[in-house]
Image 1: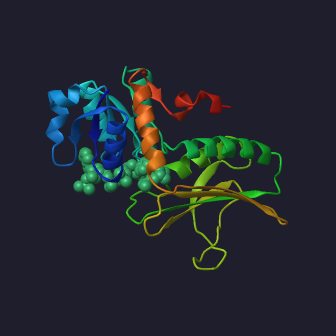
Image 2: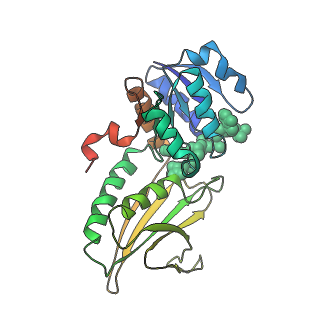
Length: 254
Ligand SMILES: NC(=O)C1=CN([C@@H]2O[C@H](COP(=O)(O)OP(=O)(O)OC[C@H]3O[C@@H](n4cnc5c(N)ncnc54)[C@H](OP(=O)(O)O)[C@@H]3O)[C@@H](O)[C@H]2O)C=CC1
Ligand SMILES: O=C(O)C1=N[C@H](C(=O)O)C[C@H](O)C1
């Protein structure tokens, strides 16, 4: 399959290696300095373009790829709140194709399914309150992470007493990070921590007066995101519309 890359940073470079190892051809690499290549024959020849850039430029990259008639896979986060509805409509009604996920790793896809199931159970147990935290490397531009927002949406859809997520603070057990979650009962706080080169650590914590239940996903490298993005590209070459991990792994749907 012919793949174009949009964004040649930490993710773009690792995706190039894995895509080549799976027998795909990289026909074009677009970074910040060669935007004119969106018009090139090489870019237009791609079966799929894989986009990993940043929250500020993702939307305009999607528009350029759509104009060139190239299907997209993207993992860029932080753009959904502003442009999500428009992009979804372009895909569901306008003939464009985007496979987007806030997290392409199989582990987080499983974690998300468990999160929704646990939230359904916790809807019946109002003595537990729920909080979330996410930790990422210091280069990350958006907070909360896209994954944390997706996980929060899974909780809000299933727990009637919660109807919005808010940015929270974090009190570590050893007291190293100060602050407490000070929010209304209908709010779900998400604390964001930026530390070293952490690949992605997400924790959901339910707490009652007598105990706590925590679910954690800890990425050991970018390997899971990278393989998931290439698998999504292979799927997208054969499908159309607004696609996501629930299309790739339908057996995880509820
Ligand atoms: N969904 C998922 O599974 C995952 C999502 N992500 C998300 O993916 C995004 C990228 O992550 P990561 O690779 O770590 O980030 P990097 O900053 O390492 O890479 C982004 C690259 O995009 C380049 N870039 C900037 N503007 C443009 C533009 N207009 N067109 C093309 N390229 C551009 C940057 O160039 P320059 O440095 O010169 O600005 C940089 O090389 C982030 O939003 C992150 O949150 C990350 C990992 C997994
Ligand atoms: O910026 C990152 O690195 C990551 N971003 C995604 C997010 O915002 O959830 C996914 C992953 O956690 C790594």
